[in-house]
Amino acid sequence: MEQDLELLKRCLTGDNSAWETLLRAYTRKLYNLCYRFTGRTDEAEDLTQEIFVKVYQTLRTFDAAQGAFSTWLNRVARNHLVDHYRRTRKDRVTSSLEDELETLEEKPSVGTEAVGQVESRERKEVLQQGLNRLSPDLREAVVLRDLHDLDYQEIAQVLGVPQGTVKSRINRGRLELARVLKRMDVMRGPAKAGSEP
Amino acid sequence: MTHLELENLASEYLEGLLEPARKADVEAHLSECGTCRELVAELRGVMELCRTAEELEPAPWLVPKILLATVGARKPTLREQLAALFRPAVQPRVAYAVAMAVFSFSIIINAAGINLRNVRLGDLNPRTWVYRANLAGHQLYARAEKFYYDLRVVYEIESRFRRLGSQPSQQEKEAPKQGPPAGGSSDTKQPGSPQWAANRGLYLAACSLAGTVPTPSANNPGPLGAGRSSSQ
Image (cartoon, rainbow over all chains, first blue to last red; front, side, top):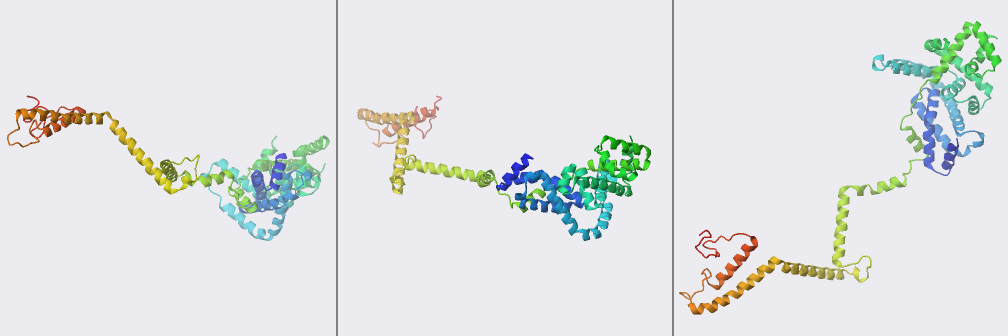
């Protein structure tokens, strides 16, 4: 955290190398957050870039007293992603079914890849499809908690809601995701494994 | 505890965030309710699936693209600028040309007699350069000439010439006693003539320098005289 603050100070003095260091440190996390929200790599790249541009332009508004830089970054990202979600809601309704069909059709045969890789890839795709079917509120809560490993307090800061709401959203999001995945018939294995003592 | 209550507490139960009393209630309900057990198992499966999901690697051009969009084209560091500046000079042909230029310059400076540590106004006059170069050339020639004449070989040859040059005068002294040859002509190939003696001396000197045995022939004024071989 102190390293981030030091880099931020240097950024504000016009040190481009400090900005580059900061950028490289957080690009992967932010890109994954965007991908979990959108489910598309190209869209995630564009959103990651837009968010970093916004962060760069508003660096001076960051207040270290209100939390860590990573929390502030997540909050900016979350607001941008929610805005993006609202902007593209209509487009997504029409294209979601087509994307889903394309994803299923483009799967290569098992013979071309190792079984473990196929399973891993399929699990990733299934998880992403399940996340895409959640409402944004529930999705962002689940993504921040289970995929980005933020604690409840941090998520509350990022989302700007009380911790009780965060807990509720996470719980509802997980339950909803479990139902979705069950409908997609992929949770049979993990669910059974989890139920065993 | 009702099913709905358990559903609301399921995540906290799985994350170990419940108080002991609440946790005991949940476990008691789970031991009796198969539906809720299945629900908790599904929830555990979801959490496991999320936490084992691998992170995606962003495209390698993403960071440069963002840098370009934020700070513009990245300014090269001083080291990179210097490297770019001297990159052409590192090529062999340029280095060779520079070396030749320096070498030529040093020769000109040396020939013009200019001391770079103490350059005077007169040193900048081209006429001075020509004069000094001319002087240096003559001095160099004189030194080379002196070196040449100081060589032992040259000295030997010269001394023999001098000695041979003095021999005809003695023969000339003896010649009036014996009388001139028939016809009174001074044939250069005639043994005993001054010219023949000079040629013979030159021949002997050359042979001794070359370290070879002289081989006389009819046209050659050998040491044993014309018409006689060395083996006889």
